[in-house]
Image 1 (cartoon, one colour):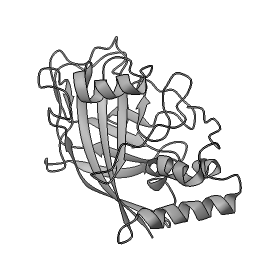
Image 2: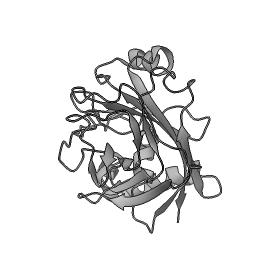
Image 3: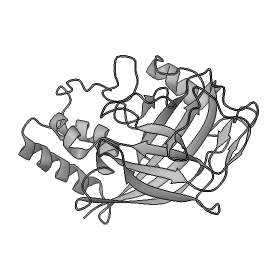
Length: 255
């Protein structure tokens, strides 16, 4: 993921686009995050029953936990683990590449945030973006923000695949860029960037809290080269290649 200049966007507009990535990965003294609930998508927002290939458990399932951790680059990550993950026939083919679209909203009724700063292949970025080949470790400080883990290592679903069955050792990890990596896009002057950040957070928060809604949709085919219209039609219309989906509801608070 290579950041490119976006200074053409007005500062408050840009903060709106970046909020989802910024809010969950700043120092503990600035922001706290609480995962309120998470659960598999229904057939309305996710894949049809016949196309569903992998389903992670809901927050109500026994043994499920959502833990905070840091990756090797110091980015804050959240891993959903425990419980039973179901892989349905024919399983995940090791010869395919898998893609995740993260739809991010501020509040239940908010509109999906635009994707900013995807790389030249349409992968990565900030906002509602496509994350490519999630079973492969890409390397670099701004890579691997969405991965499926088996035990404590990335699942080898791009090599060995995942056979149908019930798994107790699969988890979904989501990592995000740090606040310091994103502030330069608000303003080249660090003090002004901090002021813009504080202004936006205070204007969006209700009772000091910001509701965050994320839908993670998994595909077994490339979706990174689609136009905005094609991607929207795919997500909410044909759903071709969609094999999994999970909703995450969180509350972000500025301490």
